Image (cartoon, rainbow, N blue to C red; front, side, top):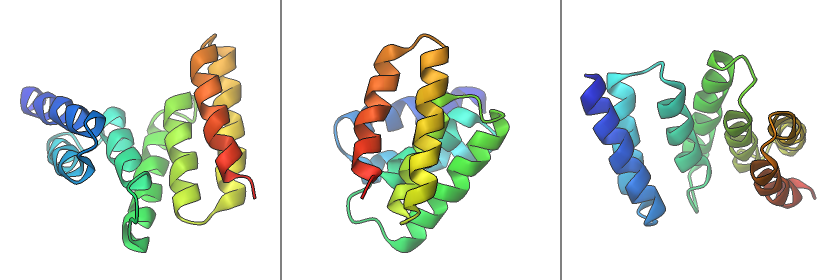
Length: 130
């Protein structure tokens, strides 16, 4: 099953990069069915849902649930996962949570020496602020 989950994940990433978000979401869901506790699968599906233009309220809520699960599994120490959680909060209209989570993600990225990731998250943080 791991090989199949990996295949679905990689296909989902390729589709996401080519801006075929709905098809990417299908692939991430397939990966999740095979490996439901994979931080990578949870995070990728949550990101795709949270950043889907015109996503329904239901999809935004699902993004928050998935991202919270990924954050819990990563002990709140993965800046990419927290960045996804911030995006999910923002998509769900939870601005304060989006800002505080994004600030924590920036801090973790900087502490790990990943200035590029910190800069990317900072750009998104600006969008969350009213």
